[in-house]
Image 1 (cartoon, rainbow, N blue to C red):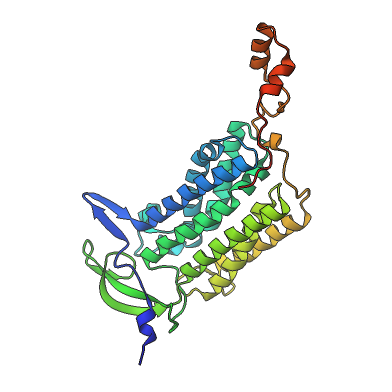
Image 2 (cartoon, helix red, strand yellow):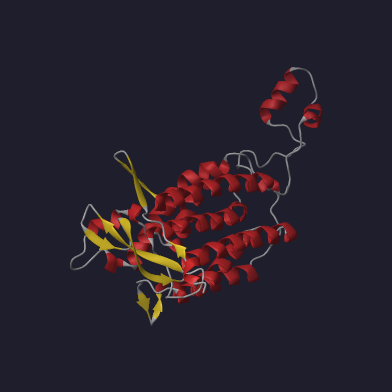
Length: 330
């Protein structure tokens, strides 16, 4: 008789490979891959809305480090028992490469970094920028969840479903310890569980598709796409947290991320319901302050001077100038 065990998803034999003296940790690779995808797609969406090229990458220089630091701070703060107390090494709190980023800290600190970047560039419309990068961000989150697959973490309860995930015992040659997170698989299956990280990955991709569809149909603006991203992600995360059985900080009998997801969901829904206007911004609002006063019919000062010196009228220069892209679509 056919056994459903043949269909179980195997975990990777290890989460780290050594290239000479350098360790290659797949958790970090997945995070970096997600960031790259978000920057490329976010740049495309920003330009389609009328923004200038290069802005997303310039802002990412601020947002990415802030987001990583914030994600780590949130993780350590909410799971402090992992790093502090008897038998614990506080230095491990700094080992971000071993895994452990809290999405809410990453979003909050990343938003702060993005705000600094936008102010530095003189971009006024924070909402338009947030709407541009919302679908890319949640897709990046999904890609980052693959890192949990390599770390054998963020899973649910035991299951006999065909897509159950096999958790292997691993042996760490450096420490001589057996466990499930670090080292190389011994081939021994400890348990078969719900791959909740995979459920979240699928949900993230679905939300990205929904956001793009809603944005195209209703031409949303002023932060509404971003608010919908937060709301939809929280909705899925709330359900997934209820399925997880790995160790977590509990508050009132619930995982702390379950409570945070519920609170943030309500805030995001309130923004969607009451924040007006909902339509897209004027493309000029996406320009830096020193350019936002110009339109496609008004030449800049240097062009006007050059045109005047040549004995031509200002109007002719404006007619020759190509129009800015407006609310283009992706």
